[in-house]
Amino acid sequence: MSAEHLCLTGVTRIYPATEGHAAVHALGPIDLSLKPGEFFSVVGPSGCGKSTLLDVIAGLARQSAGTILFEGKPVTGEVPDGIGVVFQEDASFPWLTVFDNAAFALRRAGVPDAEVRERVRHTLAFTGLSSFAQAYPAQLSGGMRQRLCIARTLVTRPRLLLLDEPFGALDQQTRLLMGDELLKLWRETGATVLLITHSLDEAALLSDRIGVMSARPGVFIDLVETGWARERDSRLAAEAGFGVVTGRLWAALRDQSIKALAMAS
Amino acid sequence: MRAAQDADPLVTAERAERRAVPPALDTMLMIGGLVALWQVGTILLGHEALPSPVATVSKLAGIMADEDFPRHAWETARASLTALVISLVAGLAIGLALGAHRLAGEVAEPMLTALYSIPKITLYPIILLLFGLGISAKIAFGVIHGIIPVILFTMNAVRNICAVYLRSARAMRLTAAQTAGTIIVPAAVPEIVSGFRVGFALTLLGTLIGEMFASQRGIGYMLVKAMETGDTGTVMALALLLVVLATAASAALLALDRRLRRHALAS
Image (cartoon, rainbow over all chains, first blue to last red; front, side, top):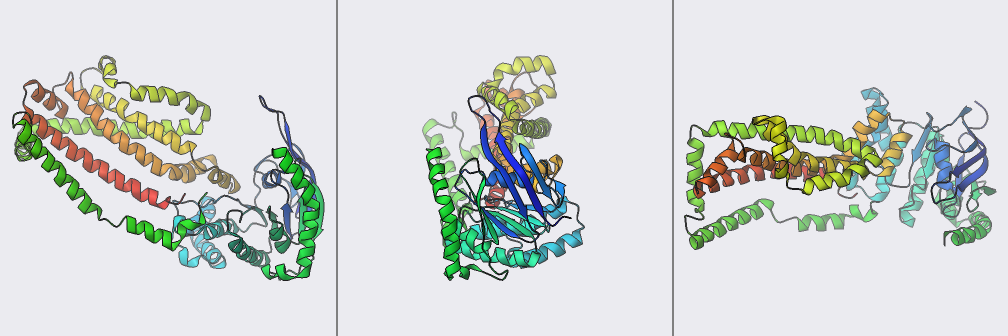
């Protein structure tokens, strides 16, 4: 395995022209390398191709050009083993209990029953859902359902965790606390994390490094190193360095957001 | 998207309070009201036109004690149950296929809706020519009534599945068969059960109509014979029997439907 956990070179995504619509150049070219265990966030104006980037890295969509190497192996339109994805929408299955939701992927993969029970129990304890194991998602709050989606992904022990605005639908305070939990999970699992977010604060609080994307077609216009210690939580928001990071992010993003707004109208 | 407030204990408690009227009491009151209305109808219209509830129940007891009755009831049960199984199995398979193939579904939907709304009795001569005068014609007639709602409900259930479930399936590296069996079908179950409920009622209706024409057996045949001789007592008694049976089956399916939906309440 090379020193990079994930390596993107010249990754581009163009939606081909269809009847009545011109081709749309959505993304790229993107060059990016993530070190193992790094927490990397992507911020950018709406419609800049952030989610497209995640889809392409996850193998849920195919890039039009460029190469993606995950642990040295190319990713081409299929989700490789070792990558876990959490979506913005609530993806918990309402017909299964919390326990069965968390066990879902392991059971489909044919993991022996005893091991499934052990790993699910561990993951639910880890994500604070143990006492709800027999509840159905409809009985949980929005924050807990999203935590369940994260648990469902973590139970497969991904080495690269891709998060597409997982806290987008939550209120600000729940969001901050979920961010703290995410940091804890990240420290304890040692996984590499790539987080897509539109919240500058969230990116500044959580990340080792932040990529700022331009309006469509999205390319990185700035890479910001935060320099935070690995042991950290949302109380960082009170520190002077936090304002410096968000200030730099906004300085890079402001013009792009104006451009994105103009494109949308 | 589910809103966070759905799991708010206050909201949940309010919902529970609104549901607090015991359903058994509601049902009793409604049945009592209907029987009273029926009795009033009998007084106004006369016993000849509308036999009273008491007379109808005793007439029904008489019919059911008759040695010919089991033969007729069995004939109807056999035909409608066979038609029901065919409607459910074939309707489910066709609905799943049409739901999965968007274009096929879009082409089929208006045709199915049109077929659903025409009086199917106009097709009965064709059915008789195809299937002959026996039980198969009645089963076929039951099926053409019952299968369409099952197809339509199943197709829409599959089409309306949250896109994120399917994306999750891909992210978890499921095979197509695993996705169909462990995500698409369970996600669609509440809708499919609704389809079964409508399909059940229409299958029974279709089978009975089938028995009313070109037939020598079954409850439909007993009904049409009573109608021809102006025997309102028998007509009412048989109608009562069918209403009770159909309502019981429908209530059982409705209870199942509600239970399945409760899990998906907040979606």
